[in-house]
Image 1 (cartoon, one colour):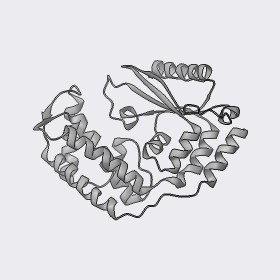
Image 2 (image 1 turned 135 degrees about the horizontal axis):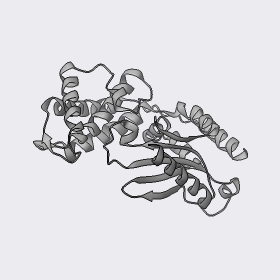
Image 3 (image 1 turned 90 degrees about the vertical axis):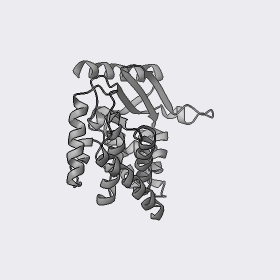
Length: 254
């Protein structure tokens, strides 16, 4: 891990130099952050950057993303701070996942201030809708046949367990799959998940294995339940812009 970590840090320094930006936060996202990676999984690096104050005052709009690298090993891209704050205001669930990634490559004091201010913009309804949608899409596309890739069970179960955490705790869910599994679940489901994970650990991730009815039934029932629950929920987004505007100006002023 140390070699790839050093390579990632070198890439981040290269981005700063060539793009004339300053990276204030960089993390791992995706399967490695979730703790369910395969040996051949790529590294999904996401970062937040700041441009010079003068760049934000130009009449012409500047791109608010940097897409740096995409190959079999590294997937590196980042968001501008302004875009990041706007997405926090919208309650973007993916951004909250980045903010809580257990694998951090770079974190500044500025980012800590940003995230502390942004936490109040977490929306239970927006997050539930995001995770429900992810699980539903995975279930419909990959878990309908008699034989399936067990990796896809995780890609459906993890967002549903995130939904359960949000429903029960009214707060931002953990990122790692094993932490989400620490919640109270039906005993037969826990046994089947353990069985599935054991088989997955001894298989190539592209291998097809028999459908596990207990897991499939749980996924289908929870998808239907959250679809109905979300419809009954009030919009709980925070409308206030003052906190985020103040953070943006303070960071630009240095």
